[in-house]
Amino acid sequence: MRWSVGSPEVPCVRCGRRVEGLAWGNECAVCIEQRRARASRLAGRISLPATVLVGIYLWLRMPHDSSFRVYGGITMLVTWFLVRQIVSKVAFEVYSREPKNEADNVS
Image 1 (cartoon, rainbow, N blue to C red):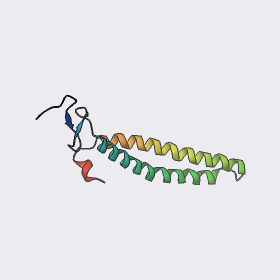
Image 2: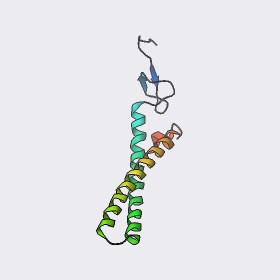
Image 3: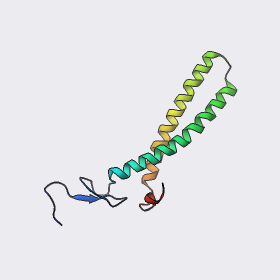
Image 4: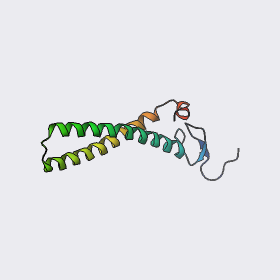
């Protein structure tokens, strides 16, 4: 095996693809993007029902005044955003701890 002057091609820890400039024990950009996409899909599936539940709660508990509805709408938007961000980051970290061969089989 002949090494160039630059950094050698190192295999990705998850898929085995050889990437130049990758540190030993890290994942390649393709694997990281796949993990990020899976986390984003899960975050979307969880944030929408959570927002609907908050909306139902607000509809049942708040007075039916227009100013309260504006605050309720803002609360729903903030809930959607925060739940999506939190679930996305947690899922991204959980997916990084999966066994290496499982990540390729689960879509």
